[in-house]
Amino acid sequence: MLSLPSVPRRVRTAVGALLLLAALTALVVLPRSDRGTAARQDGAPTRITDGDIPWPGEGQAAVTLEGSGRVLTHGAQRPVPIASLAKVMTAYVVLTGHPLRPGEEGPRIEVDRQAAHEAGVGGESTVVVTPGDRRTERELLHLLLLPSANNIARLLARWDAGSEEAFVRKMQRAAHDLGMRDTTYTDAGGIEPTTTSTAADQLKLAREAMRLPVLRDIVSTREATVPGVGRVANSNTLLGTSGVVGLKTGSTTPAGGNLLWAAKTDGTHLLLGAVLHQRAHTTPAEGLTAALEASRALIDGLRARPRSTGSKG
Image (cartoon, rainbow, N blue to C red):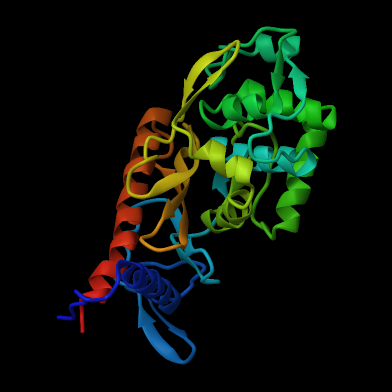
């Protein structure tokens, strides 16, 4: 057993981060990593077993450690409905076209009659807004990403591109530019089951999204007060636990539960992961609960690796 009682804490933290980086890099990257499947990387056999990573028991998942250059996947990486994970791309496209500096509110955007009419219609996730009100870009991004309001997703799309259809084309171009070859966007909010992606593709977006300071700040917020709307809570209930600092939930009956997440390690690196298609075709609430539970187990298992690896001599 290796003990490091005299090593400064900052050195132990750096060692822990490096060990986690090595652990993830050493594991094989597979288009489909079924448990117990042997593979070869750099001429050395590697075996993925139940003890390596606590993958979800269903659906698909992918994880990466920022800076490692490796993406580990589990389950068949086939496009599936992603529900409100689509809103991460909506926010990314809006902020790419209308960037905000930290602390900046951005331009005021008028709430149109369509956005007000859509509130509470069709069983979607929406927020009540008043036509004619002028909300800042940042305020609308809070409503988009915390309570996951579909009417706000469509409002932002119309403001940015003139129509939701034109905005969706921008989303698709952005996906292509990010190398998301297995992703199709057909709406700005993700309510349509034809908006599909894979866990591996969603990590490509997560990497870029978390590089935007304003988006990173918003998705780490547990709740916020938006004038004219009131207090809104983040649907990602893992925030503040297990090192989680983002990113976005998504759930519908066809999609099941989905979570695109970001979590801090004990060091300076950021763990990113996507868990998709949990308890699909049940209820959105059941699916989301399953996605949150599966993600917590995955995050805790990965964050424990540096400690368990570092304790062996």
